Length: 197
Ligand code: MN
Figure 1: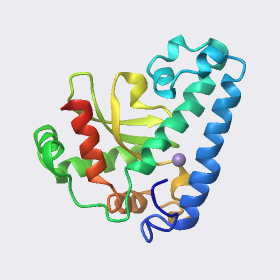
Figure 2: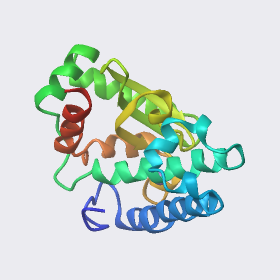
Figure 3: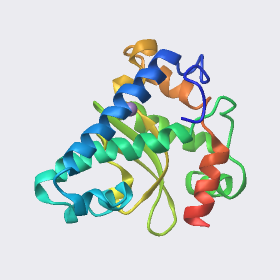
Figure 4: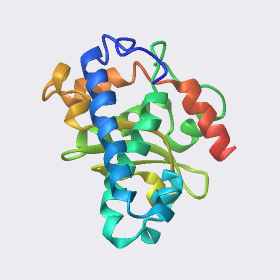
């Protein structure tokens, strides 16, 4: 994590960030390693490769790799998309792509918010780049990732209750609104440049 647990206060509280990183993310890593322990050929592949082609993962550990590997991959991206001096709007090529695809940043924000608040149960809402290098918004359940659906995630809002319950309880829309205040648009924009430029 490239900042302290309390760095995203008051939007994301320190206790939630600590438990989220040190307990939840850590458990995905531990359980992914357990899953591949008996499959060294699978275990030596990067998690991105496993998730891109789940059908190639041995059937006995495919669900574990999907869930635990997805959890590791999604959270590794999640921490980097946030920053204490975040929020606002993207610049550069990503700003132009959002305007073309969604009409405006406000319309994009509304669509991503709708995906995040509308996801039933645990999951994510993603801004991703598809195979044609076009922007797409998609929700996912559990720890499923756009990378398993031929898309590359740029930004994901974690809407598992573990991401917000201590501070926001059942008020997921408040958490989603606060999330926009800590987005690291420089990071997300650079990622867009690399993936779609
Ligand atoms: Mn999470």
